[in-house]
Image 1 (cartoon, rainbow, N blue to C red):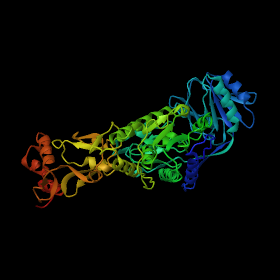
Image 2 (tube, one colour):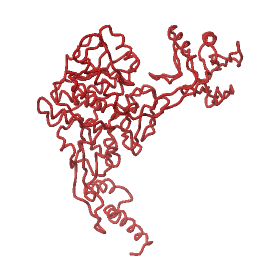
Image 3 (cartoon, rainbow, N blue to C red):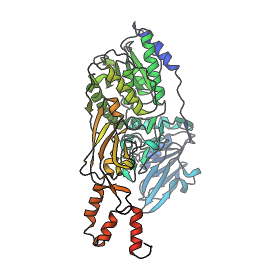
Image 4 (cartoon, helix red, strand yellow):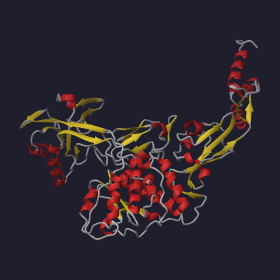
Length: 549
């Protein structure tokens, strides 16, 4: 957060500057740093004439190797090694300082870097002159340049490549907690939101959990914004630090006499350039908040900011915002608008902004609320509940008991068809958020709505298709935190020892399904179905004469 000075007299300007200065004093936990090393080894792929022309424009200390289409043997031209694909498929992987190029012909694989006897077999940089780039992510890896047929982009790449030699550092942008990840369980797929919105391809599925490659990650933050559980949080800075800075900023702004604060979140590159280029400075009540990426700021930041007293929260979109990140912002804004409007507030109090030069800052604003004072937290759902409960208490009208939300929202309930449910507890075993629990010794399915993230794992796991999802927000805090009985029935007791081991409906269904099976054509076999596991084994041995009666 940096101080913005302007020259237009404004009663809020001094309050804003004092608030920004106070916010900068709030301690921010540092994140870890990733290192990249580049010795200037450049792989240029594409048509030979264009690749040679590009290589000849690159100065020392860059060293170039060319991989061109067509057939031929490796040769050297003006000190530049030229290799031919010879009909083989090219595959690239890696990032700045660690690119690997492989050539495939059927099952045969040739590692180009190893064949050229490069140290560690890696290239540091890649200039891709093909019309179709090798990396198709919205944000390709650092060190990869694919200008296509655009001469201006090629010139920019050739100018930047010499600067990409040496040691570089990048923040580790995320923290991942697999214990609360809702991606999968028991080989079943649940939430896939982070994989769908990552613009770099840094996130991959491990079936039940995910893996995030920090070297591919470029801090877009949409994964943290989309994650319903908070398994991925942004760590540059962490949510608690961002919230504490906002709380301190808005408090100091009010105490310094400022009124009607509007927060505008912007990234530190394109967004800062747009604000700096404004011919008319921002009004004093508009407070710029610099973040690494606008996509990393989600509902767990917007809604607490309103609860802390912001009259409006705006997100500055720039042309550099990845399309997938922009789409996820729009999705999350849809949820936020539904929640705010359900409480009687204007939904557009949180909105994106494309051009600050023509902004009507307070066109749609929150009423002047009593500001909340809760501290920041890294637990995403806690931050959301703190803010929503506060806003509901301060709402101009009493909110409804519950509010229906669009599909995919991170709040809601499950609905259980009691006639179909056998209380097998498959749903309980896969729930990642402890929203579902059993009744201990009693056949009972309990549900805790505050914990439900609508990941669909329970719905997928249910063998009877007895579970459905319903997105909603329950404004009654106590009801949200109470266990509800979704289904229960009398226990079935073992016909041999009397121990409760299943439900009446489960035994009835199992008996009905198996009584036509050739292995269950006598009363003894059917009776075993009504026994607990221990007694069933004992009965089988007795029938075979291998176990004394």
